[in-house]
Amino acid sequence: MDNMLVGVGVLVAFVIVVLVKTAVVVPQRSEFVIERLGKYRTTLEAGFHILIPFLDKVAYKRSLKEEPIDIPAQTCITSDNVTMEVDGVLYLQVVNTKQSAYGIDNYHFAAAQLAQTSLRSAIGKISLDNSFEAREVLNQQVVNALDEAAQNWGVKVLRYEIKDLQPPRSVLDAMEKQMKAEREKRADIARSEGERQSLINRAEGERAEAIALSEGEKMKRINEAEGRAEEILKVAEATAAGLRSVAEALSAPGGHEAANLDVAKKYLEEFGKLAKENNTMIVPGNLTDVSSMVATAMSTLDHTKVKKAAEKTTA
Image 1: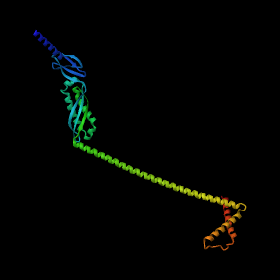
Image 2 (image 1 turned 60 degrees about the vertical axis):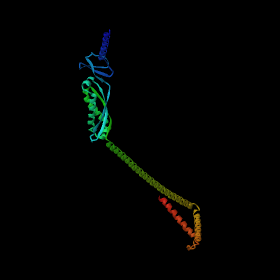
Image 3 (image 1 turned 180 degrees about the horizontal axis):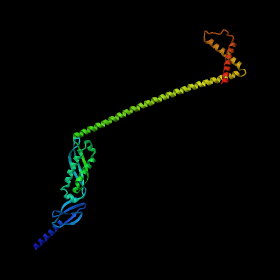
Image 4 (image 1 turned 30 degrees about the horizontal axis):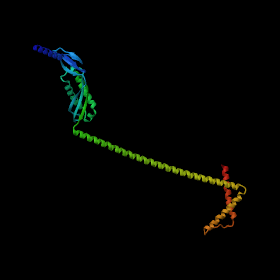
């Protein structure tokens, strides 16, 4: 009885071992490489599979997902002989499980090493200043170099990203001083431009003010001249009107006698004022002959009247 139990136990154990060796479950987005007696037999996709015990075995397991690989920091030298520490991260994906298993021993290690050497070569072609601006170019150069080499590995390089560029402390200090100097230079330029514009604006304002004052003075003088001209014209017109009125009055009946009387009256009044205001005066020899004085004045008026009539006739 005991021997029978032992035999059953051995048989159960044997069945369990056989199931473990023959039953394989492949997860989603994964593939297993199967070898039979050390030779490649097939590639199993996701699902449940039965192998031949003791003949078939799972030699390699590959994930078809995108895999990130950290690239350790390394020292690179730029074209202007500046050393810097550069690290990054590489993203790749297995596209051919068989080639990834038999094309190279360890594609993770190979991709990391090739990424470092490609990055050193790319950085050695550019200067330090350009290295900060050319990250996209450097990333693409590394991807191109890796993708070409990884075709035989059954791996597709998706992208490479530089995480950090770390120049030496002395270079960082020099760059900081340079940036500070550039900022101060731009500030000085902006300040000088502001002062220059201020002077220009002030000069233009003074010029405009001077022009406005001169224009105002010009208009003032023009207005004054026009006012004086208008005044002279008005006085001349008034004088002409007065002379016409006098001429018309003299031509009217009794006008000549009235003019004689008025002239004689004005003569006596002015003569009396002269006697009051001066202690010494010159008097005409025929002082009593007022009528002759009046006649002389009237003859002058007649002469003027005749002259104006002749001018009108000529016109």
